Length: 323
Image 1 (cartoon, rainbow, N blue to C red):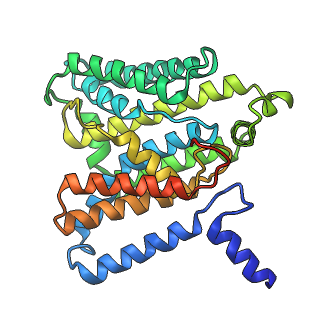
Image 2 (cartoon, rainbow, N blue to C red):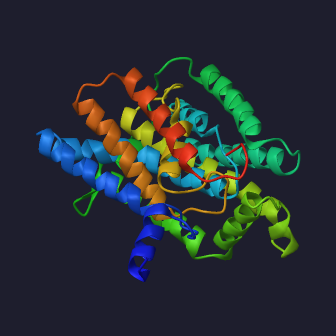
């Protein structure tokens, strides 16, 4: 095998790379876009493309946040309820200067509670965050049993407006990616996440701690970051629907996990990339948009996403039963 073919094989399989498998999903995303453009006349229309970006933005924001937790070998199943909770808070009859900082403060506390349960109480991440999902969802439905209310006008403008001719949803994506890039690749914190996850994936939970890395503190902070990104996605969705909705975040956590896994991030931890997650989001967004254009029912779409998640996780290498 020539060096060039060996390099191409590693890129396509993600073997031996801390970035995981991301090139193949990129090829799939491009192929899907070309196929939809060739077979569906509505796909290339400006209205559909704008809708594609707006619909995919909450998934991008939550998937980026979910990636921080996945890198340390965890999962956060509470982010969908945090998104719904955020819209419910913003739809309360309170001024925006109270509700907007309030949702991020509350989201940070939710993430800290998740992280504390995982790192200090040694509760499995799935159990800890699933429990939190029920808690937050219950509070959300007390505040807003059904969809209704009105969000502050400024929130609506942040989603529907434009800046220098650029639609604001695009700026949301740029800011999200730049912030995550700084945390993951421009700070020691990002290196610590990869080190912690790599140790857990190899079966040595204390490996990072033995090198002086504060594993518990960094893991707890990953859950806080994940919840903050979920709140940000909730603000975006609240601006789109202009109301509070206790069900708007339903199954969003599974979509985020699917996007992260498609992008090559190993659910066992330690391997993944930000650009891979963005590609995973693009694949899911194109899949959903294409199925909508082809009039596939939402129930079938949900089933297809479930099969896709199972397939992607099954293809990831692991030494034992688990993530």
